[in-house]
Image 1 (cartoon, rainbow, N blue to C red):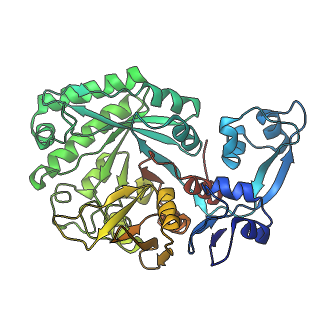
Image 2: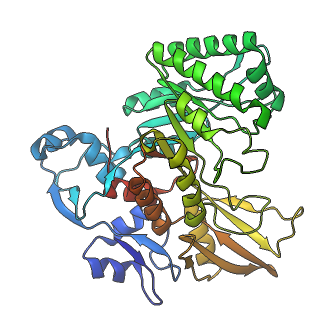
Length: 423
């Protein structure tokens, strides 16, 4: 259930209303103070259906066998156990929550090597794939690696497939359009890059590749799709996969540097799967609006399904929000990126009331600080639930998060309780 806070409510009154533990409400929703909530704040309420009281000598494996489930399912239902796997006699753990699943989706997300260990561990509970961000390359086809050993080893521990992300980053870590052109026009360089990718995937234990190229020129669209197809063929012949990230187009003729070289139909044919980057309508230098307004997201989805089979498609979900200082001045204003739990803290600190836009299906609020007005757009359980339901309705293969660096527990426990997840 998703409860929207009303004036005068506290964690204790909400817990009493649903007959649940206030301590679990605090944990599940990353709430730092039981006495401070924002009006309009969305809270995930998990109502236990089956609870097990731990007996002496029991562990996750013996309890999972008792109920015909798996240890990973117990951890997903009780994520606090990830840092305390030594069960205490008399401790209560939830075997099952009230509610029905709406469908099945593959789940993945992008992570940088410097992700916090606790964030990575808690997130891996719910993932099928972990995309490490990001390998670059040179104009001669040599890879520029990252220190990804920890990410790969942790993914392996949780049975999650590590995926190598390839972007056109140069030795300075900067996007370089010359690299895109080289891949599209230089066959010798392209072949060497593909061979180096294959060797790296094999040697480091990856399960596949994710190609994340932006700013592909319109005249390079066919050569870029050809590169993706050649990479897919090589990967598949060796037991690996290849996916490609796509800018969020709503039509074939959509203008703009990030759209014109991305041919949905060809890339959908040439990759094993595609990832729709359905976010960044609201962005750092743009006017205030939802990061992924569902009405705009659906325009992309409606176009995508005319070009690419739904079963090959993954929908993007943003794991962040933005705080804009008003008034917005194009060319001067710069929004601050924030985590979703951080947005709630800002609202509480400034006494702001959270509102919800039913067209964008996204929360927002306004506040004033130091004589300046602000507006914040972010994600909450209502917006996440709407996005997951949409992905299921369109028959997509899965959803992918950009990115996993800011821990958002509400998202993961909600996802776990409305989707059937594979281990």
